Image (cartoon, rainbow, N blue to C red; front, side, top):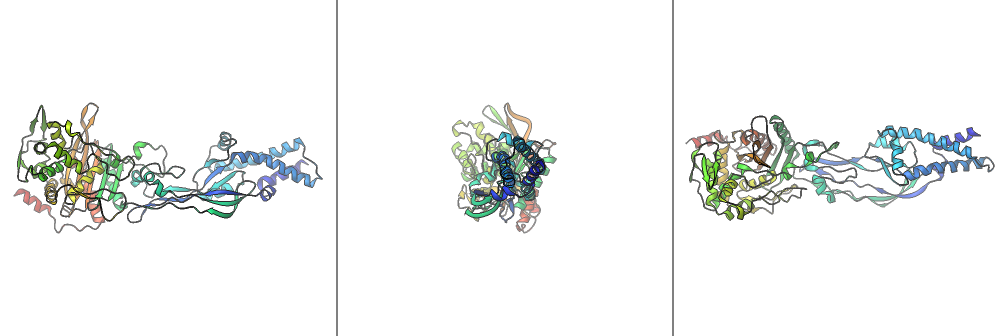
Length: 578
């Protein structure tokens, strides 16, 4: 008698028997939709979704299954034994044997899913009486097939997708990541969630007594996949920029860094990289400090990289002329304060002021201009307003209130103190110098032209300042390390003391370089910001300029930009010597 009962239980646990064959029913289930692909401007996939089923359990059905099995076996037994019922002890024997078989399968299940021993029972207890719980999310299809092959009541495979980022750390801060439900959490995955996400479908299916799908009946509503997102990013340049920035941070023992590459003609963002970064394919112990995009969200005082705009404002308004000479003897009293230069440069023309990065020279220019005019031009090039890319958390920076500016504040504003900008804002401002006075809006999406470009100063002013900035790249300028073989380069260094709770630090700096090339007809703008270099050097011309050189040179070659007709550096040097 007992042997027959145990045999029936064995069939129930290990074979596709009466319970599965005779207890089928129709149910409606959801069909997960496919999330859109994020790709670069050349169609290279940056974020894709691949099938990764999840394993679910219905705790209510899992427990109820024990009762069902006893009832079904008793029914079978009575049919073969003239209606005789199982005794209480026989029912207990049946239930014990069945549970033992399920327990063995649970052990197998936990091994397949890499779950700690006892985890399934813990979930069943925590979700007691509930109809749904995850056992494992986004596993390989082959493992899911093995799990469903165990034929455990209430345990099923659910169609889902796993987000994969082929470029890993290179674009992580830009792309962001999705959560276990495939919902964008940060960066572009978050800001374009509505576009990328699809709409789940529904279908009617046949389920067996174990509540597992055994056949599709019909589609009720087909899933609608999300739309693809085509970025302005050129992944080739992105990788180049990431590699060089990472090398620079390591070599200079820096705290962090950011780098932006813009198309000078239409404001497209071709690269935006950060240090440190993270691996979006493995989000264990992920901290916010790792996944924020410093190029968009972090601000700093831009220092001497603002000087070209002080010069442009003064030239545009007729307050100075290129031939004007400024005495820069190292010390310039302004009220009760003093503006200082690193050296006594003596008499400098306007180009010389930029070449030597004289604080005194630009301070004297700023004091010639009405405060509302000077601040107005800085605002026109985008300082103090959002770049409006739609990137989550993008910074607007800060411009000082005009009415609060004393003469000394105007003086320090002229060389980049008293305002704050992001690397993206600074790069955007330099498009006005690169594209003959046209300030471009910036975009993370691919586009042919910028219909929102605005003229902020004349073509003549832009070209004049651009030519002056070429002198910065000469041997006696501050950024000889920014030169790019075969191309004329214009740019400006910035070495900025970091502000703290008790004033400016004596030994913590931002090393910055902003530049464009080819200076004859600019195609790209690149900004490099390195935070707290601590390996000895901290000047923008020695820390950030070499990164600019490698990234700009590589990017121009990748884009097939024709080198200047001849190596113009010797000509430029000769012109300076004459």
